[in-house]
Amino acid sequence: MLDVKDLRVRYGAVEAVKGVSFSVSAGSIVSLIGANGAGKTTSLRALTGLVRPSSGEVRFETASLLGRAPHEIVGLGIAHVPEGRRLFPKMTVLENLKMGAYRARRQKDIASTLGMIYEHFPILKERGRQVAGSLSGGEQQMLAIARALMSRPKLLLLDEPSMGLSPIMTAEIGKIIRQINDRDVSIILVEQNAMLALTLAQYGYVLETGSLVMQGNAQELLRDEGVKKAYLGI
Amino acid sequence: MTASLLVQSAVIGLSIGSIYILMALGLTLMFGMMHIINFAHGAVYMLGAYVIYYVFFQSGAPYFVSFVVAMVLLGVFGYLVERSIYRPVKGGIEPTLVALLALTTFLQAAGYPVFGQLDKHVPPVFEGTKNVLGVMVSVERLVIIPIAAALVVGLYLFINKTKMGAAMRAIEQDKEAAALQGVNVHVVNGLAFAIGFALAAASGALMAPIFKLDPMMGEQPLLKAFIIIILGGLGSIPGAIVGGLMLGLIDSIVATALGAEPAFLLSFVFIILVLLFKPTGLFGYAQ
Image (cartoon, chains in turn cyan, red):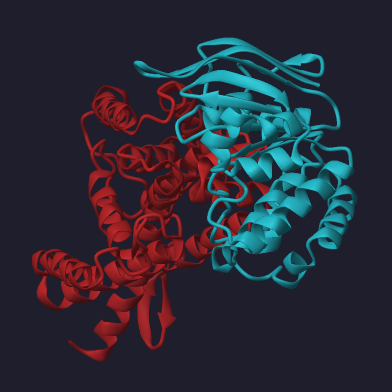
């Protein structure tokens, strides 16, 4: 479904992503793990056009994504929940959700998607008229994910969904990620919480200072001594 | 100062304030979304007034038609400025500001050979006076208030009730997040330029029958609009409205009572006081 080949991104003199390749097959959860500054976030930002890669190739289904603007990439079926959630804090929960469906043409489609979202996130219906900035961290993360789902994506990019959340809330988000995947949405999960990421994913990639150092079946990575020591703290 | 003089200068203050508001709204909208100050706003005001001179006075088109022509022409000009200046520098604030200053200087300098060295005058459009609370006020001044109010309400509805308006608010809060939802940020920024320019043109078009026309005529209202958006809070639309009304009333009532220079001085004293107690302006908030 998604194929990334030899992706390179530089910020001025610094190369943040140094030739990373990975792929996502339809219906799967793939996880990118690694420490701060490993290039995980930058890789996602390159996929959705927020930064321009210096070289490489990104194919989604039949389309090449390189050189496309973010708003076009959403239209192809990729939704990106950025690091830090990036909600519209002064808009209400409902307005945020409607922004997620910005490219939908028919009101009927928006209403039915919204109904589905409310089924999964009843709290968002309850908080519909509240401004997004007033939600708790966990609720904000749910809203960020729900807003992305409003575009009815085939592929969802999640950047650090567990950041700043309590263990209970993190488990809740994990459950939600599974449910989304059960609805045939493929997911790229970027996490510093490697345990969460590798438990959810089928396949994992380990990044270190911009390069891919290891990849494999998520279960195998969980058992790997190097991964255990470096990322799982055991 | 007699009561009748007070009423009269209050009405004139409201009408001047309306012009200030129209100028300030575009500036604050563009600042909120793009963090740029449109230095060309005064030059656009000037061009709006000249459109009235040529289309209404010289060509004899109805005033209302000329007014719409001014707004549409300069709105399109605004969109083109976004395309040719703001977009190519990829959101660079400093290059945009320098380019807008250059554009302003060019438009003003070009004004003299194109429009002539001598001041132009547009004959009155709405003649006569009207009785307001027992005081006679010129209709020309009075009519500005409902026209400006209609434009303000229109803008308010556009921003709060339409999808494009929601996109503008989204860009103001988080440009990247807006792009990730599928908003074509370039097009919406272009629309903000168009709206800002059209409102500045409307201000100039409304003032054309009242003041003399010369290529530098936009400098004074531009300065006032700067003061208003700082007073009201940068990026705040309610701030621009309240600030515009306050400054218009100060300008008119104090000028009538004490003269133009004290009024000018007092408006600055007032702003310094407001900023001392609320540095982000009346409706502003720390970014």
